[in-house]
Image (cartoon, rainbow, N blue to C red; front, side, top):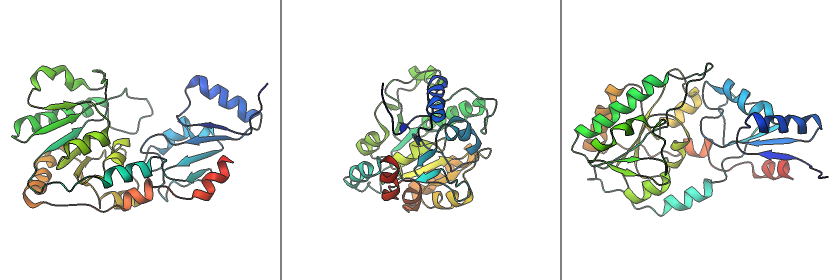
Length: 273
């Protein structure tokens, strides 16, 4: 009944969609996949994305990729939200150098997969508890940014929500929260999509990296110019104090330009047409 020249998906296919996509491929109908989150083609667990995304398309439109993970089917076009974020954050005022406000953006805890290339969930939960307790024990005004409807199974530290009265818990989009509260420091406990909504801000960013799932060297080199990278909880207090006492700044935008901003416009429109 319907004739398709091509098919586009923008979220990794579940088991039902995967069957439909496989049908289109058998019919020689081109299938285009679009990146929908962070980490793709930047980290060690690239093999996971082959299984979840790349095997279900003929071309994959990505934000950007490490030179060590390039493939002919992957086309770097940047993210469609690039211009939106740039215009939004260009309106932000410079943060007061005397500010000590900290925003923590926890990553959701998800079930461990048997092929996972990251530390087990137990250690992720422990890290989040440690960060929350660290912020609780400081006299610094702290904000915890959560999704609009957080699932306690994914954010288990909320089981102690009644003891978190000294925190401001906010439930907005990350970029809106960052603009509204203008934190001096943003803490991220995982390298994920959240990073893209933070790097254009005026805030200093502290990022915990997982040694079991490291970014490739070229990604790490650019990332390190914008964010304060740490690996252990014991490093957190040291870096926070460096930023607050010495106004230690990292404002380079090479990571954003290379791995998120729009690019290769001609290739993009050629594929879609």
